[in-house]
Length: 144
Image (cartoon, rainbow, N blue to C red; front, side):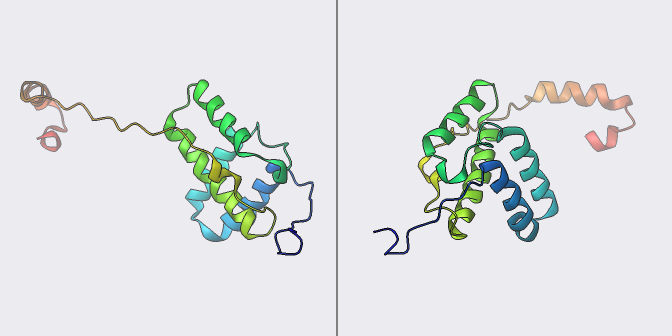
């Protein structure tokens, strides 16, 4: 049935690691800035290890979700996990557009929620003590 309606995709042995390297070289090199590409490479190098040897067509949402849980257990911030999720989601979405995957399995994952923290502010007394202490600093005018 999948063959008849165009949903059939021939099996390939490309691993997630190989696919991500190819994705970075082709998609990343032409669609993002050099700085963004550098960030993608760094994130993939640091966090895709558990995924690297799995055939990309055998990757499941459940396995990706377990990688997110492992990252959190290691003490990585929710922001880091969400950043990695965005990269994997984008890469697998591109794989689906290229006809390598039938769908983006990262759609079935939920990264941790980023908790927004309110920044602590100095009260008036603390601010005044700082300005008084900085009166002898060469940066006095900048602080004031």
